[in-house]
Image (cartoon, rainbow, N blue to C red; front, side, top):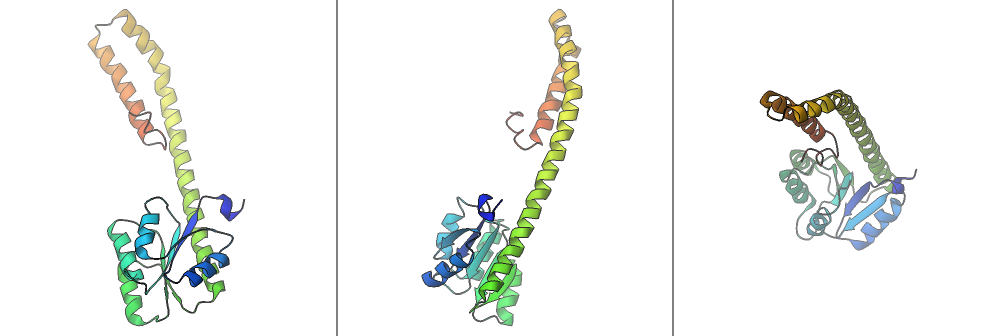
Length: 195
């Protein structure tokens, strides 16, 4: 399966269209989103969830550091890489404070950009695999617990049909139903079952 076949995207943000286009071409194996400013990138992020943001430091309007800080304030924890032609200590310290993942020097070596994006792609794939494994384990646990509870449903229903005024029987039935409903909410997609 190719990288483009997976719905994982990298967001490139730079106010220099030529550099933006060159970076996009360099990352041809990846699904690439682009934005010409931090403000435009914020609009993109309303509809997309990239696995990585690569952003220029100095742009018209909001700087790369300000953009990263704004994302972190809004609990957006996407790995964030800054491109800078002035990689100095102050920028690095500010970057660490706002949660940068990495700094890349400009003019950049495109091999460095490619390896940085590949590293974050690999990490994102591992995270997705971990999430899938955890979801699968939850689903299997839910199925096992639900199976045991469902075995008891038919006799409970039959007993309630014979004794519709049995308050204790009604209470037991609804506790079982509530347990299945609560367990369903912990499984991806199960929130629909729990409503």
